[in-house]
Image (cartoon, rainbow, N blue to C red):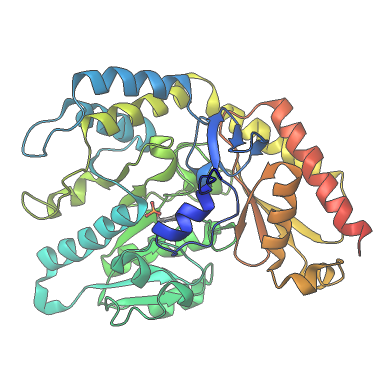
Length: 425
Ligand SMILES: Cc1ncc(COP(=O)(O)O)c(C=O)c1O
């Protein structure tokens, strides 16, 4: 008898660490906004690898950059000058930040945030002396800053820290958007305030203009750094290169950070992370102070530059705003009791579910799932990939170049799912 080959799920189960709760599906091909499972089923992907595939799956500009750069030079140590790093840094400084500064390259969002933490501590130590103990960092509850020891210490969610004591000391969490709590928490020992201009994993919450203004005022009063984690909301996802500029648009508040971290969409699917630090503080990380073997390889930088060029030259930022409005207009026509609200910026949107209404949905209570997971599973079965954010938010993170037709298809699929849930109540 012929032995059947193990499935991908069986192989994963046997050989790959079980640290992720994975959906029971494996993809073998992607093109634009679509993914194909190993069984050949097509899915409309409004998760984009969790805000990574900025130009969709396997876009031609990334393929070309990978081909051309890999034929020239893939890796080069940071012992040497790296042209592609310099070109990408110039783009980030001039086009994205439009503010003088310097860029450090790494490989992920958590690493980029670790860099911000080191920058803030080093800058305070240089300026005030190590004995001053100015090394504390304020972050927010529900934040997510990554899975390194620095990242979990910074993250304001107990679940990422469980079992990993002792944690990196010096982190204090405050309720997001609570100006009084922020003022109360900052002391002479605070070297930085770090937050996501739009919290992603925490459920798609934008910081309020008042919060930005309060943080900026505390920066002046306490001589600390204001750090933005734009790993998820940056690199164009908000409809502007910078998430905080989208959030502050029209508010009358103007705040610029001292340093910003990126990853995810920056490489469009090729691993790369980075942070920018304004000119005033760039000197804190001099030779020998920080580094990464793989940070800023010629290949990673050439691909990321092709992605950013693709966003800049293809009218993609305008498309983000247009499609965001199209989704909102489409969803505004629905009235499903399970959906409380649609919130977010650009193509970082969250459908907020009403847990009390979800309790009435047939099969929900017995499923043991959170409301968001229940709806994400139902959407996937209907052919639409979305992502849970916390227990009650379903995230839509389509590619930034998603088309009208694809948005309409997603709206129709999701409406069908919500209608089925409502009928089954
Ligand atoms: C805001 C934010 N910061 C940091 C991270 C960590 O990024 P990475 O998984 O690339 O380390 C994430 C990942 O979801 C994120 O959303």
